[in-house]
Amino acid sequence: MAIERLKSSTENMMHKPIGQLLLEEELITPEQLKEALQVQQEKGGKLGEILVKQGVVTAEDVAAVYGVQLNVPLVDLQKHVVQADSLRMIPEDMARKYTLIPLEVVNDSLTVVMAYPDDIRAIRDIRAQTGMRIEVALGVPSDIERAIDINYRSSGEIEKQVSQFSKPLDEEVDITSKVIAKTPIAQSLDLLIQQAVRDRASDVHLEPNEKNLRVRYRIDGILQEMFSLPLNAHVPLLSRIKILAEMNIAEQRRPQDGQFSVKVGSRDVDIRAATMATAYGERVTLRILDKSLSLFTLSELGFRSDTLKEYKALLKSPFGMILVGGPTGSGKTTTLYASINELDRDANNILTIEDPIEYRFPDISQTQVNFKAGITYASGLRAIVRHDPDVILVGEIRDKDTASTAVQAALTGHLVLASIHANDAISMVFRLMDLGIESYLITSTLAGLISQRMVRRICPYCRTTVEPTMDERVIYSAEMGNETPAFYRGTGCKLCANTGYRGRTGLFEMLVMNEEIRRAMLTKVSADDIKAEAIKQGMVTMQRDGMLKVKEGVTTASEVLRSVLSIS
Image 1 (cartoon, helix red, strand yellow):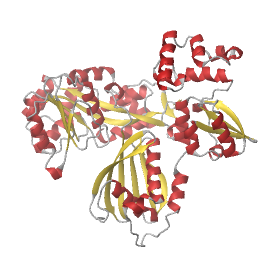
Image 2 (spheres, one colour):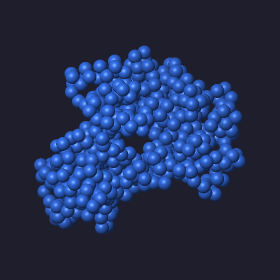
Image 3 (tube, helix red, strand yellow):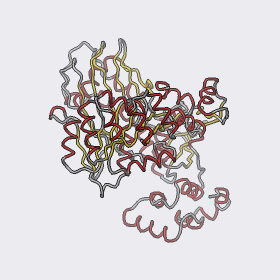
Image 4 (cartoon, one colour):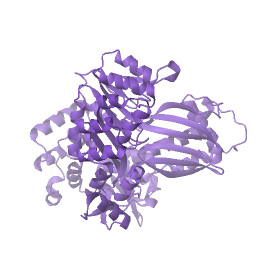
């Protein structure tokens, strides 16, 4: 849509309803407008938001028309820096309540970017809060919400709450659930989790040191130190977590684990907590599972088109075993879940044994490992086989009993999907041998092997071309030849917390079994010989997949090196 054309007709547009303006700009059809107006009449809400939710128009187009209608400038928050001075004038709760972000202070005026600049009450409240003249601008609601998440941080509020808890570490405190729930420590924990969710963190680490309590978040696979809290906050925070996770507060020497749920805004978040004694007290790791995030599809994981086509063909196998391998945190469970999501759940009887169940599927029977109840991977798998499954998902093969049962299930007419810890595709075969599975059973059972790693994606908002380092050029040339494509890197911006990366993608190495590879495995040749045969048969190594993504500008050569160095 040409915004210039809109601006030229401002006088004619200012007094027309938003629906009519969108219609005149040929952004919607009369039928779409009629349907949206009917929804508005039945359920209420703003017409522009309804049309965006229905997918008939973009939020940017609605904002552009809305801005011209109100004669208010449209601000692209991705291209503007929010001043720290302006943030201090409007509290976060007010910003979220009215969907606005203070942008800058000029003399006695505060510029505020609002999703709804015609909200007179909001403007009145802002003026009363700041005591300044308010200049109003328009922003896309989703951009404003993202700007709030990025710019308002919880550090100041956390420090304020923690400072109110002044009892020294060695002083005896009667910590009960009733007491803890009312203290600033409970609010501090809530703020720590809220900030972690906003920062897209997968884990929160609370680590007591000699002089302070270090708080780190794992974002896009990399640990980053976020807060340094006084040491006297350690015991109350630990006790609060133990209460929520239903652990034994009095037990301080043995490792414990548990789980609890919190609500962050409108989002439901599950937290898995684990404690362990260290020299300076118990450390805590919180694993965050945001249930509001949609499940990844296979096409979103980073498979190349030809690899994805081959893998989807594997998933149609009536029986056999498909293994997904990699170290902890390499995305194995995500790939398994995306694979299950690809299958026809109406035509197939799909059962799983997992530890833990991280995502719940409709129309699938999922079982949680429970050692206290005698439910292990092996025993759970044996029980599953008695329920006439077509597809079985095994969260992890970690011992001989589980491996043997999985192999037998695959041999007797079931498709088994499982994860295993191994460095690359060929190593998975030798890992099964180490667990005591005979090579003839492995070759008879395996349909395909996938090894993977996760690498950070270059931030799309600050991506720019750069001159590669000598190491990057050498490693790229070794894999791809002498071609020299444009290399990209993120310069760092607020949308990526100045890291230059935002989000992650997968690097994959897939081996589809055929007669030549089976013959090589049965002759008990070395791993290098089997790998050479697999490459001859068309396998793309993880390193090459990574360099292909470097060539496409998805990630950097240094990221690929960091992820696959252990297997190169």
